[in-house]
Image: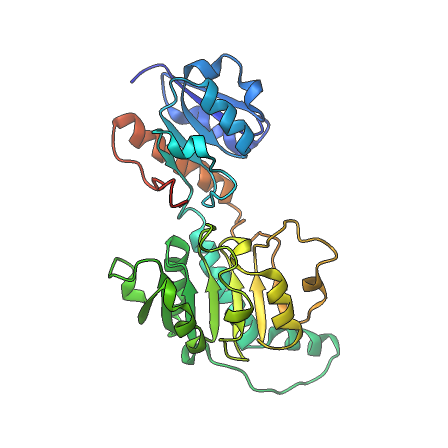
Length: 322
């Protein structure tokens, strides 16, 4: 396979994308912010790497790139990516699932420790120069419930189990599969209300689909322990944000550690900003010092598989949405 054109939706000035020059002989890379800026490369393109592409740009490329054979998305979430023509297309779509999961798993453990050890109280006491003795929780005696046991969920489970925690997982299919060695119980989606009262921490790590939007709302908060802490490292709208604000402000639940939100950036008028029992991350839990480089390296590994005719990783079920 020679004379391959790879088109990239992204900023040509992004330093990390210069690494694509290492794709090998016979490969031409064209980078542009918008589809119309790709010019004649569209006619020759065999591969699309969507670094920061919009749905409108991807749709335009799909219409104007007759030789396109594969599309890779930098991100794992695809709710803003998919559209009917792409879903119906036979062109395989792969995503960045797994590239950022380890850091997200670490954020969840940080969130658990933040509340278990009452780090905000320690910080306040230090600022007041006050010797403040109080009781803490030991997370090895607590239960982590994971809503969405995909790659992120499995990364959370591995770390929670390493900390000695009891781990429960909820997913669409509760038949055994790799990763179950890190969980103590697996629930099917319809049994969410059965799992919630068991959990000290409830972690949303599910993709966003019509079935998962607001799957954690008022009814679910009412099933949780008053001492429960909710976390979201998946997609913002999986949690009903208004219901979350209500549950936190009324102390129906103990706290929350949230990395993703229904609207981003989180609007200044959001009631979440004013609450003292929420840890807010500006969708940066996966922004490690190497996250962009890791994304490019993964694409380059994928490209090698595609060029050699080997199976690609992270092939998306476009109808399921993940």
